[in-house]
Image (tube, rainbow, N blue to C red):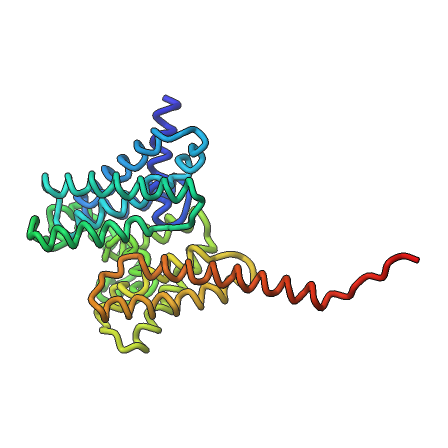
Length: 325
């Protein structure tokens, strides 16, 4: 039972790592959010994450810490979601999930061995490759989400929500509630390709139970990213559905902290990631989470350089101690 519990926890941490968290409860809440939107995508997520975790078991014990943290599962998990999101769950898409998960996990293992911070880069690379190959070869048709069959939880949830509001004397207006919550939730939801307000709220709560400051910075980054996207004259439909804010949410989760300087880096990261996102869309390259990866790399290098320069300057201007007589 102990090994089974450990294995379940590791897989849930793999899901949590999509939001840069390590808490198994966070992973469970995120899984529920995907299940709420589409049980098909939830299956793709679980299968891919399981493959990544199992591959991690084959490596030496000195990499067991990374496995325990869920680092072997999250890139594969994202690939499982995007493949089902694009092509549904069929025999061919299942094979694509297996191949993509294995390749992304091996790339992640190489990064772990070399101690490289690559975040969701394996997911981005193999999404570009596999989606391009499938589309070029016309191997599988694209599907439209969501459908009633895969969203079986949404209708009873909406009814329960409406009845609860009416019990406390609040008039239910779905459009109004969507409008009020859109800035705060869709940025979280689109990290895992979910457009539902409820899924977005669940993702926010999943991060909040792990690290409240990260969740709150994520809300701020989502609003700021949509504001910047409007200034760039991007279509309101794209901005309002979180397409320009989910990378900003990931950047906020990466740089969030309790220090005064952390807020500055979250703002800078948000602005850069929206600009990168906008550029990639303008050249017809699917951004996925690459704007987050590129922005994080840029800022980590910049911060390292600034820190080195600051130390150098401090050493130059630090008063020299006189030797004792």
